[in-house]
Length: 447
Ligand code: NDP
Image 1: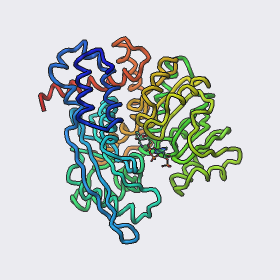
Image 2: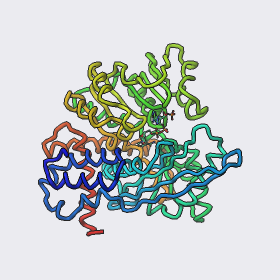
Image 3: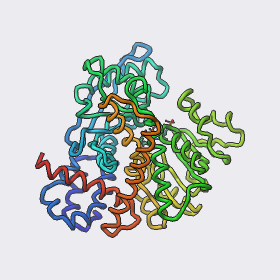
Image 4: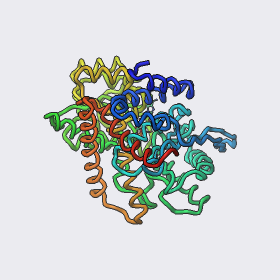
């Protein structure tokens, strides 16, 4: 065990015993406990009130069967999850992931991260996450609808505009949110802001689609500015080709940064002239095709099978695909190629060893719970608009988003400095997120 404090060693051991085989969950709990160790040293009352033990245990776990009929009339059975992790500062909020790799441990890791991320936005939202091992890839629209309706038929019993508000994540885009919203409305007889990431014709928010990627770039810009660097003229390596990656690439272009890569689960693209965000949107959002199609839009680009984004020379690395996609070897390669900043668009895409390597080798590193918080922040703004029954302009949401990301950067920077960890944004994000939630939990008593 890696903690100085016997209390934290004991707690970590219990988390591992109680949640066997859930390695991603152990990984994120360990990272948070390591970060908050100095806070607990300064505040023994946090240990006495058992607040950390309570925090690592979800308030509620919902696990359910999702039966649906495929196009051949055959019954398919998937597994659905919703983890309502922490409601100390607001209704549970967090996405629904649809991917064959989904299991309880993955959802628990994402739900735990979400508590701190949501707290960092400064908005009143608690932490939750959900999803299913259903794979929307290769399914017809009717099959996706049948799955979404079956999923929501069960989930609708546990969510609501003031209790738990799910959103999109890997595999859950505008189409899936639409089918789920329709089923919720039908079963509960309520037209309310129960989901975010909705279409604009039924309560969605302008700029929500762009928010995670744009927010990532706003935060990166602010951080670099505070270190005397400018965005303009830099080169970025981006992984992923989904919602986060596409809008990170689009905003990078707008800021004068050249994003030269993107990737999906089968291969990656290098475009020396800069990835064309419009082409990527057409391939991924409209035609739902593989990245092999990209070459048809840009003759100079290269497509490679497998993994390889992190071998490319860049100033800024933006991992925007999935967890643990950037390992120690990748980190060494990026550092050797002169990377100055790594900001996570995805949730925990960098392994613990790679994170440590960046921190020890002078690379600015911002974890996903801070750097990708723009998505959930815009979701919270969507909730506000739904409650007010008013739609804000794109500019208003985008301006708020930018303010939130800039403030967030300064909060994590100051939290790290306060405890003597200047420049360590992992520690800063965990502490800043933790302090607000702990304050609320302690004020509300042992519940
Ligand atoms: P999408 O489903 O839109 O895109 C995910 C991208 O990552 C796709 O290009 C996908 O490839 C690739 N990918 C997924 N799984 C793997 C894998 N196992 N190996 C390699 N590539 C993979 O998801 P998002 O863009 O919404 O989410 C990306 C990340 O950002 C996730 O970690 C998510 O939790 C996080 N995030 C998303 C937010 C949002 O607002 N959307 C908010 C905050 C965090 P393929 O197309 O082949 O499937």
